[in-house]
Length: 206
Image: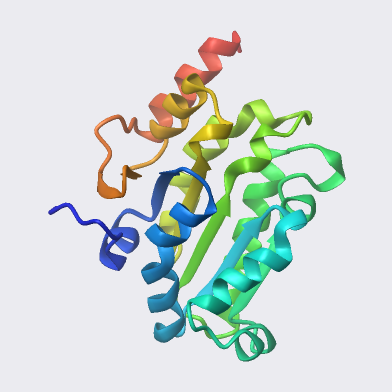
């Protein structure tokens, strides 16, 4: 695959699961703006998970992309939820409950007539001091077993200033493709889900 300074929509769709390493929201939107815009023009479902504390600012950023926010939200095409209502429901992270929620969203989108769903997930929830967040890498690996069963792509966004180097290495290994330094490419560090899960379990002594 040729490298591109902007993520090609076909690249997202082919790999289903992408790791986006960026330095803050400005760079994240620069990388993902065309992906978001094309999804709306294609009539795809957009499901974005963010820090609820920045909800108003996030919507303003989407508006700057030229999206009709009122129409998108009223039709159900756009859904923006906070970490507090998804990953950190009940005050902790349960990877299996979150995988079930994603499956529910995908099934509902299909029933409502959306042929493709695009998830954007701000992974900053994993930097919160909450029980279960240490399972982030395992959750990412399991996504590779869930998402390909559906017509969907997931872009996991990591602000590198908020994560340790070890955390970034682990999550990179759970994504088939990665956007690093503004370049989307096949991820040479990717490890198949079953192998990575086995390694993570062994590391914990399970």
